[in-house]
Amino acid sequence: MIILTKEDLCLKLTFSFGSIMLENKVIILMGPPGCGKGTQSVRVSQKIGKPHISSGNLFRENVAKATPLGEKVSDCISKGFLVPDDLVISMIEERVSRPDCEAGYIIDGFPRTVKQAEIFTQFLCTEKRPFIVLNITVSDEEVYDRLISRITCSSCGQTFRKGTFSMEDRCPNCRGRFIVRKDDNVETIEQRLKTYREETFPIIHFYSTTGKLVEVDGSGDEESVFFKVMKSLQ
Image (tube, rainbow, N blue to C red):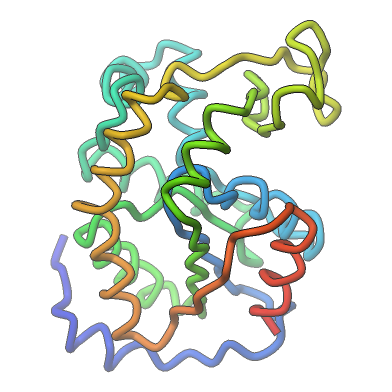
């Protein structure tokens, strides 16, 4: 696969954002672990009627089913490391090529490296897909507080704050069982933030050169952040 230079990509990024209901629009949500991009992606998906694609959920689905891909990524996820680019890109491109994504989609947890961003941007350009990148920002302190204090549905991946439900309750969305993710501990969170700063944060600079990046303040409760996310899409 040929990767375009940043200059080539910038020349090709001439799509207009237009209305939020633009038929084939792609919305990419980014930010550090625990910023709420998964929760907000689900809410945006429900609001505008486009599928939500989560790389994390795709990984966990493959791990749970013990697929060949799942075996390769399991160790990376549990330790907070990044999955190799070629595996991630193949998985994402296959998923967004399905019929339910023809009218656009919301994606979070991807891309996580500049190489992934470049290849995926080329993919979107080739597909003539208009897109916008929302970067949800929160402090490291808030990341630790959110991740240590959350439980996750083992089926749909939705997260909830501890105390909202007990571990014996069922997910209100899909009736799945709650778990505490193996990577929601202080040591792994520290590694995830380190990985984010070193490998993922440079993507923000890359997207800032394309004119597609919008910063969203992720502090505050879920409802207030959702309001800010939706406002940024106008």
